[in-house]
Amino acid sequence: MLINRTSIVSAAHYQYQRVYFNISGKERYVVSGNVTETSGYDINFFVFDQNGYNIWREGGSSLAYVNAEKIESCGYTFVINQSGYYYFILDNTYTFFINKVPEITASYGYQVNTTKYRDVQKTRTVTRARPNAIMNCARDD
Image (cartoon, rainbow, N blue to C red; front, side, top):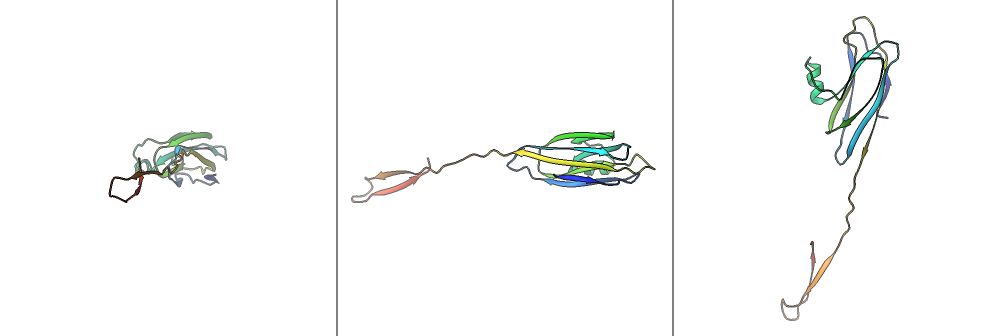
């Protein structure tokens, strides 16, 4: 399990979990999980890459991998398309008086395609080089 935690998000604040994903050599890197606000209220939940998080944190608008606003519970799945840091954000900035107690889980999976190679040694004998000389040459064709 990548993330499995319950925490208190104070009114007018947010919390995040930063996770690094290395997708090198992997295909269809899928992240999925669930967010549930356990105290009976709602919460915002977003997932951004590093660039998106920086823009969002400064008050700008950015495309999120997951954008779930004022949810009581939400299942999510998204595909990672580049290696880097990703931010799982539990946002309670829109509430000024009520603390929230969300539970978040996340797991991941991917495919690895391997190509098997075998060594093939090719040799040839050249007898016209010099009299009484025999050459054995390895080739890469």
